[in-house]
Image 1 (cartoon, rainbow, N blue to C red):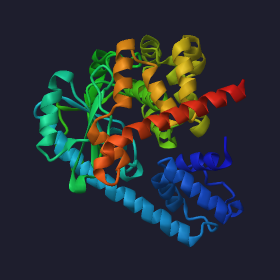
Image 2: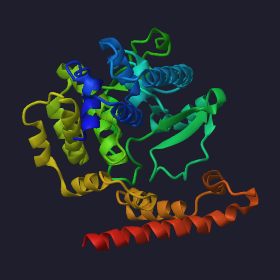
Image 3: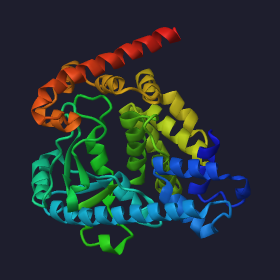
Length: 389
């Protein structure tokens, strides 16, 4: 493991106290804080270093920058959580809603919600209530994002909305998890809905909308979902340390509530064993997360070749063209054709947003520009394969 990442992981779990801080140079500190920001861990670094006493080797200018970043994250989180309060109050009147990922975890597992940076709000509603939920959110001033290629339920699992003050709050409203109906990565939703419980945020300001209509995943189902989201949807190459730390907190905060036999059985049934193994292995290597004896070996035994190969592919940094290709791989043939068509011929609104031609009426020329870029990436990928051979 890289020395900067190793130190960052130790700070995140509060285990860097005996470290020889005097050996950390100004350049090392700068690299550490840049990496922490990229990995979503700056608030945790600020929290632990300020609690343990600022190391003398940390330059004051970097300490002040770290402090400013921490308060910027805290301010953004406060704005997002205020909007979440409004959205839940509106949606929960018409449909059950599950709070997912960062918003759910920051308000239940982290000592303070300011320690878990939020970049969007993720909610899950039953498909039969999707239109009602969208209407409720749009009445709050939100509208569908135009900066996405878009799709159908066969290829997509959520709709993206944007709103709030200055329209800076993205909301992803899910009706499915991981992928669309024609995506083998998608699990049966019935089990996940059975594995929900009342959401109980520890922040008093968020208590008003909580109740029978506002839910969260149980620790067992959340462990499976977070691992699959990381390794199957984004991949290790796009993963961030904060996502592994989410898993670490989930495991260490709820050891008595995790049904590991059920976790293993459902991972096998969903074809997620390879993804769960990769996520748990990475979490343990980074944070020394305690896992039941033999669980990693058992997941290796359960792993199927198709999922394992996909996880390996997603662990490698890739071009946008290769990323799009991997987006096609899990889909059924008809859905692949549909998605590929939309990827090569996105809507005019998307093209205007993505390429921003000047003057604006030149936007049709963005299509050949897009195709040439895809061809260039494909040629580069083929050349890399040829060199490797």
